[in-house]
Image (cartoon, rainbow, N blue to C red):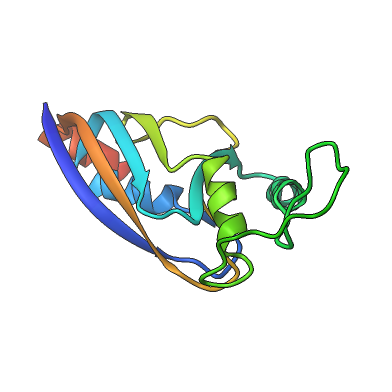
Amino acid sequence: MEQIICELSFQTSGEGFTDITPSINNWIIKKQISKGILIVYLHHTSCSLTINENADPNVLKDLSCYMKALVPEEGFRAISGQGERNSYLHSDEGMDDMPAHIRTALTCSCLSFSIQASKLVLGTWQAVYLWEHRMKNHTRRVSLHAIGEKQEKNDAFITSQHR
């Protein structure tokens, strides 16, 4: 059993989803991890991690629209919809700053996975996404902490032949 810790960086293109599944699976192969557990941790408070459908892009569009309706950039009202709109107090980096922090608080910054046959165990239509909540492009850092077994030499050859 071994532990491997690494950091990957991803460039986002403003608000939206970046599929980081291929990068994580490539890292698993490069580190020759055959099975184990992987913790994925995001180092930021204005973006998040999510596991969601990778087949229909409308799922991600709907998620984004729903989150924008739930956490509007202009401020917020009581959940009942009644009363005055309250402005956010925190806006040091722009109008999307505090809404991004709220959206992150409502989602995840850390996910855990099983690794089997040198790849993440995911459902048929699932992918791991970095969900950028800010409007501008950002470089985002993700830590990977794997605890698992390395491939045997024969396993590594078989795995490389089937990819």
